[in-house]
Image (cartoon, rainbow, N blue to C red; front, top):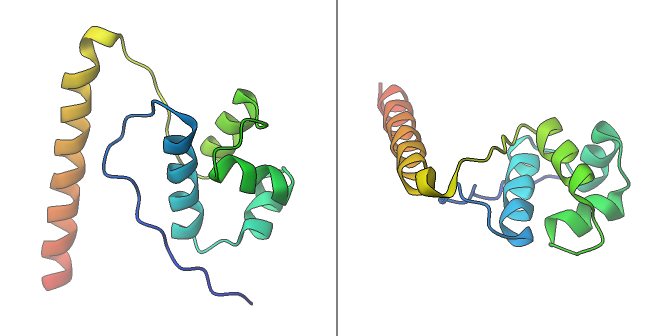
Length: 108
């Protein structure tokens, strides 16, 4: 069995392009310890489609990208442009609080 090296999840939750969602999907997949082949079978897409999505190839449609994201645990949501920055900051603060709490638990 191939060892999967986890990829760090992007620090910015904003998705403005295919590269951003591809990086999030790769981080989710590798964080689950899944190879491309295993994840593709689990999600129900070809290995090539998943690889294309992770590398931001234009050949992957939005419906497939959203399906893969959902199946691998990546939440995608939209907010009005005027609320984007406050929501982004709130998400970053929540992630930081979770990371701090996790670190305290590990230290005992």
